[in-house]
Image (tube, rainbow, N blue to C red; front, side, top):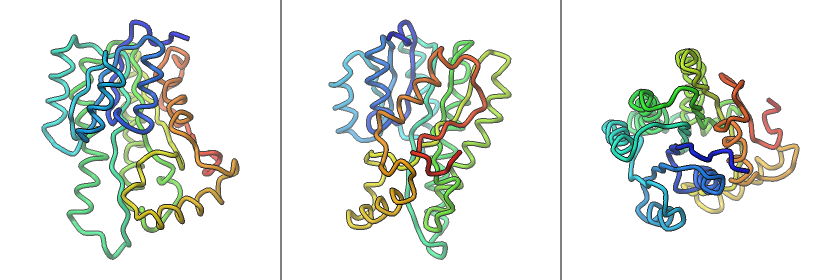
Length: 246
Protein backbone atom coordinates (compact mmCIF):
# COMPACT_ATOMS: atom_id res chain seq x y z
CA UNK A 1 0.00 0.00 0.00
CA UNK A 2 1.14 3.56 -0.69
CA UNK A 3 -1.76 5.69 0.49
CA UNK A 4 0.47 8.57 1.56
CA UNK A 5 2.77 8.94 -1.44
CA UNK A 6 3.16 12.66 -2.13
CA UNK A 7 1.34 13.60 1.09
CA UNK A 8 2.68 15.52 4.07
CA UNK A 9 1.30 14.62 7.50
CA UNK A 10 1.89 16.35 10.84
CA UNK A 11 1.46 14.32 14.01
CA UNK A 12 1.60 16.07 17.36
CA UNK A 13 2.78 13.69 20.06
CA UNK A 14 4.33 11.70 17.24
CA UNK A 15 7.49 10.53 18.99
CA UNK A 16 5.90 7.78 21.08
CA UNK A 17 2.87 5.53 21.41
CA UNK A 18 0.10 5.71 18.84
CA UNK A 19 1.61 8.72 17.13
CA UNK A 20 4.94 7.02 16.50
CA UNK A 21 3.23 3.81 15.40
CA UNK A 22 1.25 5.83 12.87
CA UNK A 23 4.34 7.74 11.75
CA UNK A 24 6.19 4.51 10.94
CA UNK A 25 3.32 3.27 8.82
CA UNK A 26 2.93 6.58 7.00
CA UNK A 27 6.65 6.54 6.18
CA UNK A 28 6.33 2.97 4.92
CA UNK A 29 3.47 4.13 2.70
CA UNK A 30 5.46 6.92 1.13
CA UNK A 31 4.39 9.91 3.22
CA UNK A 32 6.41 12.89 4.42
CA UNK A 33 6.24 13.53 8.14
CA UNK A 34 6.38 16.34 10.66
CA UNK A 35 6.45 15.02 14.24
CA UNK A 36 6.33 16.83 17.56
CA UNK A 37 7.22 15.76 21.08
CA UNK A 38 8.68 17.11 24.30
CA UNK A 39 11.08 14.41 25.51
CA UNK A 40 14.61 15.01 24.21
CA UNK A 41 15.32 11.28 24.26
CA UNK A 42 12.19 10.37 22.31
CA UNK A 43 12.75 13.21 19.85
CA UNK A 44 16.24 11.87 19.16
CA UNK A 45 15.03 8.28 18.89
CA UNK A 46 12.25 9.25 16.49
CA UNK A 47 14.68 11.22 14.32
CA UNK A 48 17.03 8.25 14.16
CA UNK A 49 14.16 5.90 13.37
CA UNK A 50 12.64 8.21 10.73
CA UNK A 51 15.58 10.20 9.33
CA UNK A 52 13.52 11.83 6.57
CA UNK A 53 11.00 13.28 9.03
CA UNK A 54 11.02 16.81 10.42
CA UNK A 55 11.08 16.24 14.19
CA UNK A 56 10.24 19.32 16.26
CA UNK A 57 10.38 19.90 20.02
CA UNK A 58 6.98 21.42 20.78
CA UNK A 59 4.90 21.46 23.97
CA UNK A 60 1.18 21.88 23.32
CA UNK A 61 0.74 23.38 26.79
CA UNK A 62 2.98 26.34 25.91
CA UNK A 63 0.79 29.15 24.50
CA UNK A 64 3.57 30.17 22.10
CA UNK A 65 4.02 26.65 20.71
CA UNK A 66 1.38 26.84 17.95
CA UNK A 67 3.09 29.85 16.36
CA UNK A 68 6.48 28.14 16.60
CA UNK A 69 5.08 24.99 15.05
CA UNK A 70 3.38 26.87 12.23
CA UNK A 71 6.64 28.64 11.40
CA UNK A 72 8.53 25.33 11.39
CA UNK A 73 6.02 23.82 8.97
CA UNK A 74 6.09 26.86 6.70
CA UNK A 75 9.88 27.13 6.63
CA UNK A 76 10.26 23.45 5.74
CA UNK A 77 8.02 23.54 2.69
CA UNK A 78 4.55 24.37 3.94
CA UNK A 79 1.32 22.64 3.04
CA UNK A 80 -0.22 19.77 4.98
CA UNK A 81 -2.42 16.99 3.66
CA UNK A 82 -3.06 15.60 7.11
CA UNK A 83 -2.97 16.79 10.71
CA UNK A 84 -3.26 14.37 13.61
CA UNK A 85 -3.75 16.31 16.85
CA UNK A 86 -2.60 13.51 19.09
CA UNK A 87 -0.50 15.09 21.85
CA UNK A 88 -2.04 14.85 25.29
CA UNK A 89 -1.40 14.75 29.00
CA UNK A 90 -3.09 12.60 31.64
CA UNK A 91 -3.33 12.72 35.42
CA UNK A 92 -5.88 11.56 37.95
CA UNK A 93 -7.06 12.97 41.26
CA UNK A 94 -9.91 12.61 43.72
CA UNK A 95 -12.59 15.28 43.32
CA UNK A 96 -11.47 17.03 46.50
CA UNK A 97 -7.83 17.09 45.38
CA UNK A 98 -8.37 19.06 42.17
CA UNK A 99 -6.98 22.57 42.39
CA UNK A 100 -6.42 25.41 39.91
CA UNK A 101 -2.93 24.27 38.96
CA UNK A 102 -4.10 20.70 38.23
CA UNK A 103 -7.05 21.97 36.18
CA UNK A 104 -5.12 24.61 34.24
CA UNK A 105 -2.27 22.29 33.30
CA UNK A 106 -4.64 19.67 31.92
CA UNK A 107 -6.75 22.19 30.03
CA UNK A 108 -3.68 23.93 28.61
CA UNK A 109 -2.20 20.75 27.19
CA UNK A 110 -5.34 18.92 26.10
CA UNK A 111 -7.73 21.70 25.04
CA UNK A 112 -6.04 25.04 24.48
CA UNK A 113 -3.08 23.38 22.76
CA UNK A 114 -5.03 21.60 20.00
CA UNK A 115 -7.37 24.58 19.55
CA UNK A 116 -4.51 27.01 18.95
CA UNK A 117 -2.55 24.49 16.89
CA UNK A 118 -5.46 24.05 14.49
CA UNK A 119 -6.04 27.80 14.41
CA UNK A 120 -2.42 28.48 13.43
CA UNK A 121 -2.08 25.55 11.04
CA UNK A 122 -5.46 25.82 9.31
CA UNK A 123 -4.11 28.07 6.56
CA UNK A 124 -1.43 25.49 5.82
CA UNK A 125 -3.95 22.68 5.42
CA UNK A 126 -4.38 21.91 1.75
CA UNK A 127 -7.92 21.75 0.39
CA UNK A 128 -9.17 18.20 0.84
CA UNK A 129 -6.88 17.56 3.81
CA UNK A 130 -7.83 15.42 6.79
CA UNK A 131 -7.69 16.29 10.49
CA UNK A 132 -7.82 13.58 13.16
CA UNK A 133 -8.26 14.48 16.83
CA UNK A 134 -7.37 12.01 19.59
CA UNK A 135 -9.98 11.86 22.34
CA UNK A 136 -10.43 9.01 24.84
CA UNK A 137 -13.05 6.58 26.08
CA UNK A 138 -12.55 8.31 29.44
CA UNK A 139 -15.08 10.81 28.09
CA UNK A 140 -17.77 8.13 28.40
CA UNK A 141 -16.53 5.93 31.25
CA UNK A 142 -17.47 8.17 34.20
CA UNK A 143 -14.38 7.26 36.24
CA UNK A 144 -14.34 9.38 39.38
CA UNK A 145 -10.57 9.91 39.46
CA UNK A 146 -10.42 11.01 35.81
CA UNK A 147 -13.14 13.67 35.71
CA UNK A 148 -10.90 16.54 34.58
CA UNK A 149 -9.07 14.45 31.99
CA UNK A 150 -12.41 13.14 30.68
CA UNK A 151 -13.70 16.71 30.42
CA UNK A 152 -10.71 17.76 28.30
CA UNK A 153 -11.22 14.86 25.94
CA UNK A 154 -14.97 15.51 25.77
CA UNK A 155 -14.25 19.11 24.82
CA UNK A 156 -12.22 17.87 21.86
CA UNK A 157 -15.16 15.79 20.64
CA UNK A 158 -17.43 18.83 20.74
CA UNK A 159 -14.91 21.09 19.03
CA UNK A 160 -14.11 18.57 16.32
CA UNK A 161 -17.77 18.61 15.27
CA UNK A 162 -17.62 22.39 14.95
CA UNK A 163 -14.32 22.22 13.07
CA UNK A 164 -15.81 19.72 10.65
CA UNK A 165 -18.60 22.19 9.81
CA UNK A 166 -16.24 25.16 9.56
CA UNK A 167 -13.72 23.46 7.27
CA UNK A 168 -16.13 21.50 5.09
CA UNK A 169 -16.27 24.23 2.44
CA UNK A 170 -12.60 23.53 1.73
CA UNK A 171 -13.22 19.80 1.57
CA UNK A 172 -11.28 19.31 4.81
CA UNK A 173 -12.53 16.42 6.92
CA UNK A 174 -12.33 16.34 10.73
CA UNK A 175 -12.82 13.12 12.67
CA UNK A 176 -12.18 11.87 16.19
CA UNK A 177 -10.21 8.82 17.25
CA UNK A 178 -11.49 7.48 20.58
CA UNK A 179 -8.94 5.02 21.94
CA UNK A 180 -9.73 2.88 24.93
CA UNK A 181 -7.12 0.90 26.89
CA UNK A 182 -4.12 0.95 24.54
CA UNK A 183 -0.66 -0.38 25.44
CA UNK A 184 1.48 2.78 25.38
CA UNK A 185 3.49 4.76 27.92
CA UNK A 186 0.49 7.03 28.52
CA UNK A 187 -0.31 5.63 31.97
CA UNK A 188 3.28 5.67 33.19
CA UNK A 189 2.44 8.54 35.54
CA UNK A 190 0.77 5.92 37.74
CA UNK A 191 2.80 3.83 40.20
CA UNK A 192 3.39 0.37 38.67
CA UNK A 193 1.11 -1.43 41.15
CA UNK A 194 -1.72 1.07 40.63
CA UNK A 195 -1.31 0.88 36.85
CA UNK A 196 -1.45 -2.90 36.83
CA UNK A 197 -4.59 -2.91 38.97
CA UNK A 198 -6.19 -0.24 36.77
CA UNK A 199 -5.43 -2.23 33.62
CA UNK A 200 -6.82 -5.45 35.12
CA UNK A 201 -10.05 -3.68 36.02
CA UNK A 202 -10.36 -2.12 32.57
CA UNK A 203 -9.64 -5.39 30.76
CA UNK A 204 -12.36 -7.10 32.79
CA UNK A 205 -14.84 -4.70 31.16
CA UNK A 206 -13.54 -5.07 27.59
CA UNK A 207 -15.55 -7.58 25.54
CA UNK A 208 -12.45 -8.58 23.53
CA UNK A 209 -10.69 -9.28 26.84
CA UNK A 210 -7.39 -7.51 26.24
CA UNK A 211 -5.62 -4.17 25.95
CA UNK A 212 -5.16 -2.92 22.40
CA UNK A 213 -1.87 -2.12 20.72
CA UNK A 214 -0.60 1.24 19.50
CA UNK A 215 -0.58 -0.18 15.97
CA UNK A 216 -4.26 -1.10 16.19
CA UNK A 217 -5.19 2.45 17.20
CA UNK A 218 -2.87 4.00 14.62
CA UNK A 219 -4.41 1.89 11.86
CA UNK A 220 -7.78 3.57 12.39
CA UNK A 221 -6.20 7.03 12.52
CA UNK A 222 -4.42 6.32 9.22
CA UNK A 223 -7.68 5.22 7.62
CA UNK A 224 -9.17 8.59 8.59
CA UNK A 225 -6.10 10.49 7.37
CA UNK A 226 -6.07 8.68 4.05
CA UNK A 227 -8.15 8.99 0.89
CA UNK A 228 -9.91 5.77 1.95
CA UNK A 229 -12.10 8.02 4.14
CA UNK A 230 -12.92 10.86 1.75
CA UNK A 231 -16.64 10.77 2.65
CA UNK A 232 -16.13 10.54 6.41
CA UNK A 233 -16.27 13.66 8.57
CA UNK A 234 -17.64 14.76 11.95
CA UNK A 235 -17.47 11.13 13.10
CA UNK A 236 -16.07 9.32 16.13
CA UNK A 237 -14.22 6.03 15.78
CA UNK A 238 -13.82 4.03 19.00
CA UNK A 239 -10.82 1.71 19.16
CA UNK A 240 -11.58 0.15 22.50
CA UNK A 241 -12.27 -3.56 22.12
CA UNK A 242 -15.97 -2.85 22.69
CA UNK A 243 -15.49 -1.13 26.06
CA UNK A 244 -17.94 1.70 25.39
CA UNK A 245 -19.99 -0.20 22.80
CA UNK A 246 -20.11 2.91 20.61
